Amino acid sequence: MMKRILVGLAGTPYTPVAIQRAVALAAQHQAEVTGVTVIDLSKISQLSGVSSGTDSVGNSRRQRLAITRDHVEQALADFHAACDGAGVKGRIIQESDVPFTKLIDLARYHDVMVFGMRSVFEHDFLCEDPHSLLVRLVAAGVRPMIAVSPKFRFISRVLIAYGGSMESAKAMKRFVQLRLWPEAQLKIMTFNESESEASRLAHDAADYCRAHGYHVEAYQTNTGVPKNLLLAAATLWQADMIVMGNSARSVLLRRVLGDTALDVLQNTEIPLFLCQ
Image 1 (cartoon, helix red, strand yellow):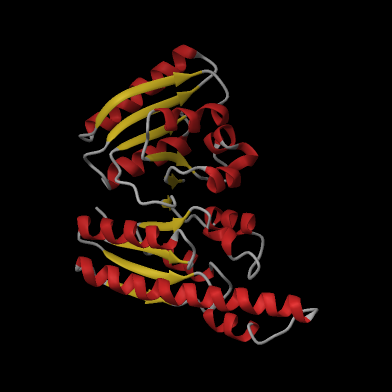
Image 2: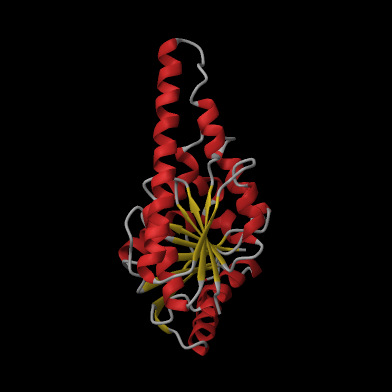
């Protein structure tokens, strides 16, 4: 059961899709939505009047800050309009601390967080390194998270990356138990050096999902390198979402993404369901 959804309002090209995804889920599950700005608008206003270096550099910075402020304010208006249009209860909390601090705090009291895949990269001139921000979200135990793609997708085909670790099992179980898209077709993709073990894992995972009422269209096993196969397989199968574990200590995350976790978030066009 899902009753509270948290959505980051960063004012990036991904924000409209994040809002649409959060509000659509809320309408479907009779839930409420909390929108939180991940940029401190008061700090933007202060910085916009400060010059840095040469006049040209200062003017460029002020222009970017003004654009950011306008985009965040537009996101706030879009959020209100989307909630009102769908008849969904929504509230907005504006960031007034270090970026993402409030987001982490609020995540404790929400069932799922929705954010743009590459939103943390859009405003890195205002905050710390985007990699550390992502690590902070994971290390703080923020879960589950839905990273939305640039375009809104109807979720009808979901690929679950399952390596047999407890972290990947938690991600699969959390996705299934939340029943975000109960009519979606699932595909289990497993990776193991042993083909027989990969097949066993895939079979057991498929049985679990079927026990929860899901249709598992197919399951696929692989003995190759996961990070070289996962996205290609998801694209070939025309998946609308990929489910995977996101713990910093996750065996699956290291095997599937390794040191390229940020590259995946920056480059994939398929939404992600990330869980610890």
